[in-house]
Image 1 (cartoon, rainbow, N blue to C red):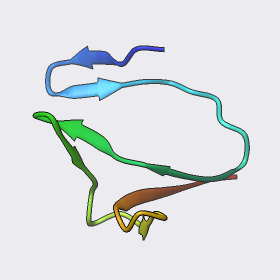
Image 2: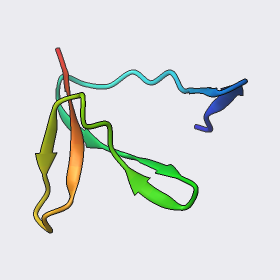
Image 3: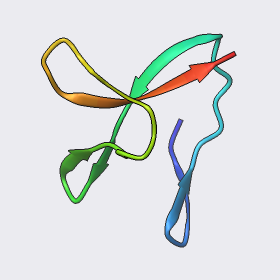
Length: 54
């Protein structure tokens, strides 16, 4: 499912089962995460944001 762009915002609506999800973004060709949100390191030592869906 593609993202929908509206100005500076990019939006996608997904229905996810309950659980923990790790994510990050590609900005100008580089992987990024948001340090002000919950973060965890993955198995390779890279940092991802963490989302808990209930």
